[in-house]
Each structure stands twice: as structure tokens, then as C-alpha cells.
Length: 128
Image (tube, rainbow, N blue to C red):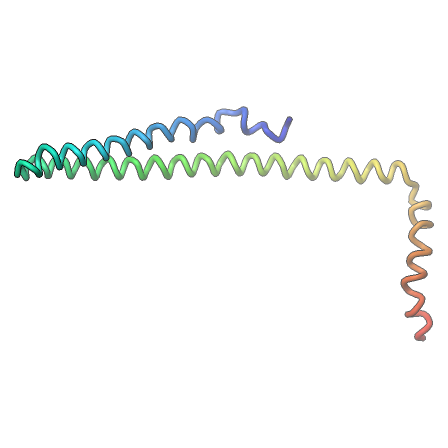
């Protein structure tokens, strides 16, 4: 349960709040482009078309900035989640190692390894 602590915090919902704003800028850019073509370019009104160009550029810049903000906020959540996972893995590894050595005495563990070590090093001892 501790590994999903970042998912319960405030940082998880930040990208979720930014994405609708990004979509709003995308929708606004599309509507502005349609209005510019239908109302001003088709009827040869260049002054109003320039105004729509500025609005369109602002909508694209806003969409880009909020998209970057969403990606940044998502990466922060990922870093928090990975840090929690790393801490949990290290803690679990230490507990497993501790349980193993509590169950096995060091002497019994060494006694189990000695015959295997002798078999592995026998060719080296014969070569001398």
C-alpha cells in the first residue's frame, strides 16, 4: 500500500487538472482558425484576419505550455512512485535476508557451501 502513496497525494491530480486546459486551448485554436477562414479570409477582411492570427498563435502557445506543464507534473508523479518502489524493494530485500540468516545459522550455511566449494576447486588443487 505504501507503493501507491504518490497516487493518493495532491501531486497525482495536478496533471489531471492541466489536461482539460490543454484541450481547451486546442479547441479554441480550431474554432479561431475556422472563424478566420469563414468570416474574414473568405470575405477579404485582412485586418480582422490578422487579429485572428494573433489569437490563433496565442492559443497554440497556451496549448504547448500547458502540455509541457502536464508532462512535467506527470514526471514528478513517476519519480515519486519510483522512489517509493525503490525504498520498498530495499526494505523487503533487507527483511528477506534477515529472515534467512535468522533461520540458518552461519555455521550451517558455511557447512552447506564447503562441499560445493571443494568440488569446484578440486581441479585447481590437482593442477599444482
